[in-house]
Image (cartoon, rainbow, N blue to C red; front, top):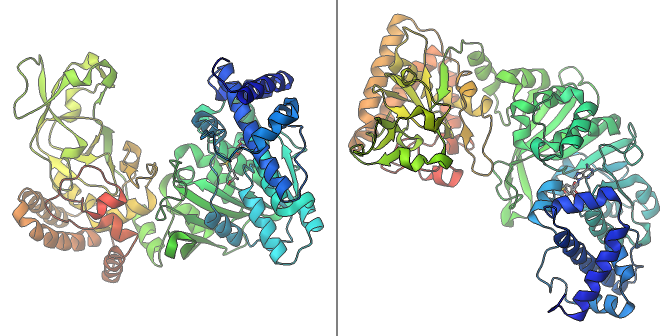
Length: 629
Ligand SMILES: C[S@@+](CC[C@H](N)C(=O)[O-])C[C@H]1O[C@@H](n2cnc3c(N)ncnc32)[C@H](O)[C@@H]1O
């Protein structure tokens, strides 16, 4: 311990003594968070104790008793001599500059705390007014219970009654201490009960069938990050959720329904991906048997969790089957002035229709009046596209050696082939080939036969906001940033491209097929299964010929930057033709065009700002124009 101050040495010694008293399971968890390094785990424990000492000092200054010493940080403080404890307590909060949490511990436990505007919105949506029995099963630093307390007190509920009605649970003793301290500062000795437990496993901490409201922001921890033994236990406990890569938050939703009394409400902050991913289909089916009250997407209110790579979604469900004709409220949240509160615009849809709307049971997130009938019409059409992604080139085995840029292939390549990239493909057009691959299938993971790339074929960038389809007449190979698609034999490729690039189809894809929205950047991944779910009407000869003519013309215009305005005009004519083929009435098309000028569709479908190179498509970049380069 050479070089450490006396206080640090005392702290480390105390941490060591406290460590030896911890349960085996807890030590294993803290060690895992410190990548198995005991010294690092001890120094985290010491850091939490430092924060605990300062928190106790704040409690004392406000006239409250310190927290009991029966948790790890408390034990460290007990092992310190009074002088050292006092010295620690009198340090400037945060003077050490070190957060008591590590990035790994936050990931392992899903430690992302909720800001007040979101907490308030969710409590509003849940109709909380202070009388309810509330369980917060992943309480963290207490965001929801603190606010529930304040709101109930403001509504005149007496502290003693309130304390009986609120309960928080968290598996992490460090988090729990933060919550205990914050609640004691707010509520004094009457603070509600907080329990250290795995909420998913401890029926005593979270008794079933008792709660009026289960609220919070459960941990998002991807299935593969949950320790194998625990994952097996959760899977066995919630067989309805299926064996897919279930996020920890999914288990909390299933458990939440059990904890509620009949008619009680579950109000959770979740990840939007949870309601679109294939692996969460079982979860959606489970939820769909209950009364879905509100779903609010925060896709258009960026920054709600600046450090977390998820798009939040607020879900409110009432336990029990939906009454006949029950309507789901779908909300789109945006920030109000000064980002102090969230504002929500709403649409509504009868629950049965809502659940049946999207192929594969995904949940659409925002629909305006009239959208449902339009989407239902398209949904009834055949989905005949075959699609697959391009070559997955393993970077670790030297993709750089296999790929080169330039007008000509390098002389050193043994089997040079032209290669396209997602960047080279936009609606209607591909860039002239500027990349080359040395086609050595043994160096490529998931190498496809060259026939797969035989032209003509449809190309679609895999990551984009909306399908952008080009016809490629060449035999160029493609990277896995490009999807290759083919209609059934005999169908004209240009007519198919015209349908896929048309307004009705893109609106359909936006609402119903946005599987796998990439966190934070508002991009979609057009997986093969997504493309294979795109509806294509059967065309009579005349329609097909006319759409093919328009598609060819659009492709020609797209090559000439000076004629892009004409392309925009041509697309209007093409949308009319496509709308007829898709069975839309003139008034439906008019409404679609109107909606296409308003957010959220306006942002997704915004027409060209011409002459710009498309590279990344996030909302910000997209506003700078991305449909055509
Ligand atoms: C996303 S944080 C949310 C905290 C708080 N609800 C908020 O919104 O600020 C999730 C919390 O769940 C806790 N947690 C993780 N697994 C848990 C489990 N099995 N049982 C109870 N809590 C758990 C973590 O320690 C973390 O504090």
